[in-house]
Image (cartoon, rainbow, N blue to C red):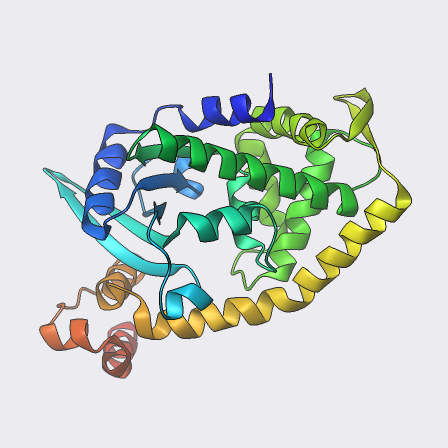
Length: 297
Protein backbone atom coordinates (compact mmCIF):
# COMPACT_ATOMS: atom_id res chain seq x y z
CA UNK A 1 0.00 0.00 0.00
CA UNK A 2 1.29 3.49 -0.85
CA UNK A 3 1.06 6.51 1.43
CA UNK A 4 -1.59 8.11 -0.81
CA UNK A 5 -3.72 4.98 -0.74
CA UNK A 6 -3.51 4.78 3.05
CA UNK A 7 -4.42 8.47 3.36
CA UNK A 8 -7.38 8.12 0.99
CA UNK A 9 -8.70 5.19 3.04
CA UNK A 10 -8.26 7.10 6.29
CA UNK A 11 -9.98 10.26 5.00
CA UNK A 12 -12.91 8.20 3.70
CA UNK A 13 -13.78 6.63 7.05
CA UNK A 14 -17.27 7.58 8.28
CA UNK A 15 -18.12 10.37 10.70
CA UNK A 16 -21.32 11.00 12.64
CA UNK A 17 -24.17 12.05 10.31
CA UNK A 18 -24.72 15.25 12.31
CA UNK A 19 -21.11 16.30 11.78
CA UNK A 20 -21.29 15.54 8.06
CA UNK A 21 -24.49 17.59 7.77
CA UNK A 22 -22.91 20.46 9.71
CA UNK A 23 -19.85 20.37 7.45
CA UNK A 24 -22.04 20.67 4.34
CA UNK A 25 -23.89 23.66 5.75
CA UNK A 26 -20.68 25.42 6.80
CA UNK A 27 -19.12 24.73 3.40
CA UNK A 28 -22.14 26.26 1.66
CA UNK A 29 -22.13 29.31 3.97
CA UNK A 30 -18.47 30.03 3.27
CA UNK A 31 -18.36 29.13 -0.41
CA UNK A 32 -15.88 26.32 0.19
CA UNK A 33 -14.86 23.42 -2.01
CA UNK A 34 -13.82 20.93 0.67
CA UNK A 35 -14.13 20.37 4.41
CA UNK A 36 -11.69 18.44 6.58
CA UNK A 37 -12.70 17.32 10.08
CA UNK A 38 -9.99 16.71 12.66
CA UNK A 39 -9.17 17.20 16.33
CA UNK A 40 -10.42 16.11 19.74
CA UNK A 41 -14.06 15.50 18.75
CA UNK A 42 -12.91 13.13 16.04
CA UNK A 43 -10.77 11.28 18.58
CA UNK A 44 -13.66 11.11 21.08
CA UNK A 45 -16.30 10.41 18.42
CA UNK A 46 -18.90 12.67 20.05
CA UNK A 47 -20.76 15.96 19.55
CA UNK A 48 -19.80 17.63 22.83
CA UNK A 49 -17.87 20.86 22.76
CA UNK A 50 -16.51 22.22 19.48
CA UNK A 51 -15.87 20.27 16.31
CA UNK A 52 -12.89 21.43 14.26
CA UNK A 53 -13.29 22.02 10.52
CA UNK A 54 -10.89 23.26 7.87
CA UNK A 55 -12.75 24.72 4.89
CA UNK A 56 -10.64 24.91 1.71
CA UNK A 57 -11.50 26.84 -1.42
CA UNK A 58 -10.01 27.19 -4.87
CA UNK A 59 -10.16 31.00 -4.87
CA UNK A 60 -6.85 32.86 -4.59
CA UNK A 61 -6.34 34.31 -1.12
CA UNK A 62 -6.67 38.09 -0.99
CA UNK A 63 -5.89 40.87 1.46
CA UNK A 64 -4.83 39.98 4.98
CA UNK A 65 -5.79 36.33 4.43
CA UNK A 66 -3.02 36.08 1.84
CA UNK A 67 -0.44 37.05 4.46
CA UNK A 68 -1.75 35.62 7.72
CA UNK A 69 -3.93 32.56 7.43
CA UNK A 70 -6.26 30.94 8.18
CA UNK A 71 -9.39 33.00 8.77
CA UNK A 72 -11.11 31.59 11.84
CA UNK A 73 -14.74 31.71 12.93
CA UNK A 74 -17.35 30.10 15.15
CA UNK A 75 -20.51 28.57 13.69
CA UNK A 76 -23.61 27.07 15.25
CA UNK A 77 -25.53 24.67 13.02
CA UNK A 78 -29.04 23.70 14.13
CA UNK A 79 -30.04 20.19 13.08
CA UNK A 80 -33.44 19.64 14.63
CA UNK A 81 -32.92 18.84 18.30
CA UNK A 82 -29.11 18.88 17.90
CA UNK A 83 -26.87 21.93 17.65
CA UNK A 84 -23.38 21.36 16.31
CA UNK A 85 -20.87 24.00 17.34
CA UNK A 86 -17.80 24.33 15.15
CA UNK A 87 -14.56 26.24 15.14
CA UNK A 88 -13.85 26.76 11.46
CA UNK A 89 -10.56 27.66 9.79
CA UNK A 90 -10.74 28.85 6.17
CA UNK A 91 -7.89 29.05 3.69
CA UNK A 92 -7.19 28.50 0.02
CA UNK A 93 -6.22 25.10 -1.27
CA UNK A 94 -2.96 26.58 -2.58
CA UNK A 95 -2.03 27.86 0.88
CA UNK A 96 -2.96 24.57 2.49
CA UNK A 97 -0.88 22.55 0.03
CA UNK A 98 2.18 24.79 0.46
CA UNK A 99 1.96 24.57 4.25
CA UNK A 100 1.43 20.79 4.12
CA UNK A 101 4.61 20.40 2.07
CA UNK A 102 6.55 22.31 4.73
CA UNK A 103 7.42 25.14 2.35
CA UNK A 104 6.60 27.82 4.93
CA UNK A 105 7.70 28.33 8.53
CA UNK A 106 4.24 27.27 9.68
CA UNK A 107 4.00 24.03 11.66
CA UNK A 108 0.27 24.02 12.39
CA UNK A 109 -1.03 22.47 9.16
CA UNK A 110 1.29 19.49 8.83
CA UNK A 111 1.38 18.90 12.61
CA UNK A 112 -2.43 18.65 12.69
CA UNK A 113 -3.05 16.76 9.48
CA UNK A 114 -0.49 14.05 10.07
CA UNK A 115 -3.09 13.07 12.68
CA UNK A 116 -6.34 11.28 11.75
CA UNK A 117 -8.78 13.39 9.73
CA UNK A 118 -11.88 12.91 7.61
CA UNK A 119 -12.71 14.50 4.27
CA UNK A 120 -16.41 15.24 4.76
CA UNK A 121 -17.07 17.42 1.70
CA UNK A 122 -15.38 17.68 -1.69
CA UNK A 123 -16.91 19.59 -4.59
CA UNK A 124 -15.60 17.11 -7.19
CA UNK A 125 -13.10 14.29 -7.70
CA UNK A 126 -10.28 16.65 -8.59
CA UNK A 127 -10.74 18.50 -5.30
CA UNK A 128 -10.84 15.25 -3.34
CA UNK A 129 -7.63 14.10 -5.04
CA UNK A 130 -5.89 17.43 -4.34
CA UNK A 131 -6.84 17.38 -0.65
CA UNK A 132 -5.78 13.74 -0.33
CA UNK A 133 -2.39 14.59 -1.83
CA UNK A 134 -2.03 17.57 0.52
CA UNK A 135 -2.75 15.43 3.58
CA UNK A 136 -0.23 12.84 2.33
CA UNK A 137 2.28 15.69 1.98
CA UNK A 138 1.55 16.78 5.55
CA UNK A 139 2.30 13.28 6.83
CA UNK A 140 5.50 13.14 4.77
CA UNK A 141 6.63 16.52 6.15
CA UNK A 142 5.89 15.41 9.71
CA UNK A 143 7.81 12.18 9.12
CA UNK A 144 10.89 14.14 7.99
CA UNK A 145 10.87 16.28 11.12
CA UNK A 146 10.18 13.21 13.27
CA UNK A 147 13.32 11.68 11.79
CA UNK A 148 15.31 14.81 12.64
CA UNK A 149 13.95 15.04 16.21
CA UNK A 150 13.38 11.39 17.07
CA UNK A 151 15.39 8.76 18.92
CA UNK A 152 17.40 7.27 16.04
CA UNK A 153 15.80 3.87 16.57
CA UNK A 154 12.49 2.83 18.07
CA UNK A 155 8.80 2.12 17.44
CA UNK A 156 6.64 4.55 15.52
CA UNK A 157 5.16 5.90 18.77
CA UNK A 158 8.60 7.07 19.95
CA UNK A 159 9.22 9.07 16.76
CA UNK A 160 5.76 10.65 16.82
CA UNK A 161 6.00 11.44 20.54
CA UNK A 162 9.30 13.26 20.02
CA UNK A 163 7.81 15.24 17.14
CA UNK A 164 4.58 16.26 18.87
CA UNK A 165 6.33 17.32 22.06
CA UNK A 166 8.49 19.65 20.00
CA UNK A 167 5.60 21.06 17.93
CA UNK A 168 3.62 21.76 21.12
CA UNK A 169 6.59 23.73 22.47
CA UNK A 170 6.94 25.65 19.21
CA UNK A 171 3.34 26.91 19.28
CA UNK A 172 1.29 29.00 21.68
CA UNK A 173 -0.71 26.12 23.13
CA UNK A 174 -2.83 25.89 26.27
CA UNK A 175 -2.21 22.15 26.50
CA UNK A 176 1.11 20.83 27.83
CA UNK A 177 3.46 18.88 25.49
CA UNK A 178 2.45 15.66 27.28
CA UNK A 179 -0.97 16.03 25.60
CA UNK A 180 0.68 14.30 22.64
CA UNK A 181 0.39 10.98 24.49
CA UNK A 182 -3.41 11.25 24.36
CA UNK A 183 -3.27 11.92 20.61
CA UNK A 184 -1.11 8.86 20.01
CA UNK A 185 -3.13 6.54 22.23
CA UNK A 186 -6.41 7.49 20.53
CA UNK A 187 -5.42 5.82 17.24
CA UNK A 188 -2.06 4.01 17.49
CA UNK A 189 -2.70 2.04 14.28
CA UNK A 190 -2.87 5.26 12.25
CA UNK A 191 0.55 6.43 13.40
CA UNK A 192 2.15 2.99 13.16
CA UNK A 193 0.92 2.65 9.57
CA UNK A 194 1.67 6.14 8.28
CA UNK A 195 5.25 6.60 9.48
CA UNK A 196 7.00 3.86 7.46
CA UNK A 197 4.84 4.65 4.41
CA UNK A 198 5.77 8.33 4.67
CA UNK A 199 9.47 7.53 4.90
CA UNK A 200 9.25 5.09 2.01
CA UNK A 201 7.44 7.69 -0.14
CA UNK A 202 10.55 9.88 0.16
CA UNK A 203 13.02 7.14 -0.64
CA UNK A 204 14.15 6.70 2.98
CA UNK A 205 15.15 3.09 3.52
CA UNK A 206 14.25 1.29 6.74
CA UNK A 207 15.91 -1.43 8.69
CA UNK A 208 14.50 -3.14 11.74
CA UNK A 209 10.79 -3.70 12.29
CA UNK A 210 7.75 -2.00 13.74
CA UNK A 211 9.13 -2.59 17.23
CA UNK A 212 12.33 -0.67 16.42
CA UNK A 213 12.43 1.18 13.10
CA UNK A 214 15.79 2.54 12.05
CA UNK A 215 15.58 4.90 9.05
CA UNK A 216 18.71 5.10 6.95
CA UNK A 217 19.57 8.72 6.23
CA UNK A 218 22.87 10.58 6.07
CA UNK A 219 24.01 12.72 8.97
CA UNK A 220 24.20 15.68 6.58
CA UNK A 221 20.52 15.32 5.65
CA UNK A 222 19.49 14.89 9.27
CA UNK A 223 21.39 18.07 10.22
CA UNK A 224 19.68 20.00 7.40
CA UNK A 225 16.28 18.98 8.71
CA UNK A 226 17.34 19.86 12.26
CA UNK A 227 18.37 23.35 11.09
CA UNK A 228 15.03 23.72 9.32
CA UNK A 229 13.28 22.74 12.54
CA UNK A 230 15.25 25.26 14.65
CA UNK A 231 14.05 28.05 12.37
CA UNK A 232 10.42 26.93 12.73
CA UNK A 233 10.77 26.56 16.48
CA UNK A 234 12.20 30.07 16.79
CA UNK A 235 9.45 31.68 14.68
CA UNK A 236 6.52 29.48 15.70
CA UNK A 237 5.31 31.47 18.72
CA UNK A 238 5.67 34.90 17.03
CA UNK A 239 3.65 33.60 14.07
CA UNK A 240 0.97 32.24 16.41
CA UNK A 241 0.87 35.61 18.20
CA UNK A 242 0.28 37.41 14.89
CA UNK A 243 -2.61 35.07 14.19
CA UNK A 244 -4.13 35.77 17.59
CA UNK A 245 -3.92 39.53 16.98
CA UNK A 246 -5.60 39.06 13.62
CA UNK A 247 -8.28 36.82 15.15
CA UNK A 248 -9.07 39.46 17.78
CA UNK A 249 -10.36 41.70 14.98
CA UNK A 250 -11.56 39.20 12.37
CA UNK A 251 -12.88 36.17 14.30
CA UNK A 252 -16.35 35.59 12.84
CA UNK A 253 -18.91 34.89 15.56
CA UNK A 254 -16.47 35.91 18.32
CA UNK A 255 -19.17 37.20 20.69
CA UNK A 256 -21.39 34.15 20.22
CA UNK A 257 -18.39 31.87 20.83
CA UNK A 258 -17.29 33.75 23.97
CA UNK A 259 -20.77 33.73 25.51
CA UNK A 260 -21.15 30.02 24.80
CA UNK A 261 -17.77 29.31 26.45
CA UNK A 262 -18.73 31.39 29.50
CA UNK A 263 -22.03 29.56 29.89
CA UNK A 264 -20.39 26.16 29.38
CA UNK A 265 -17.68 26.74 31.98
CA UNK A 266 -19.43 28.98 34.53
CA UNK A 267 -23.16 28.44 34.07
CA UNK A 268 -23.67 32.19 33.53
CA UNK A 269 -25.97 32.80 30.59
CA UNK A 270 -25.68 36.23 28.96
CA UNK A 271 -27.80 37.50 26.08
CA UNK A 272 -26.20 37.97 22.69
CA UNK A 273 -27.25 41.56 22.02
CA UNK A 274 -26.74 43.15 18.58
CA UNK A 275 -24.16 45.50 20.12
CA UNK A 276 -22.16 42.63 21.62
CA UNK A 277 -22.24 40.79 18.32
CA UNK A 278 -21.03 43.84 16.35
CA UNK A 279 -18.39 44.94 18.90
CA UNK A 280 -17.06 41.87 20.76
CA UNK A 281 -13.83 43.59 21.87
CA UNK A 282 -15.62 46.65 23.28
CA UNK A 283 -18.20 44.38 24.94
CA UNK A 284 -15.59 42.19 26.61
CA UNK A 285 -14.99 44.34 29.76
CA UNK A 286 -18.70 44.43 30.57
CA UNK A 287 -19.07 40.69 30.04
CA UNK A 288 -16.06 39.99 32.26
CA UNK A 289 -17.50 42.28 34.96
CA UNK A 290 -20.79 40.33 34.89
CA UNK A 291 -18.85 37.08 35.16
CA UNK A 292 -16.85 38.40 38.12
CA UNK A 293 -20.03 39.59 39.87
CA UNK A 294 -21.73 36.23 39.29
CA UNK A 295 -18.76 34.36 40.74
CA UNK A 296 -18.72 36.61 43.81
CA UNK A 297 -22.43 36.07 44.32
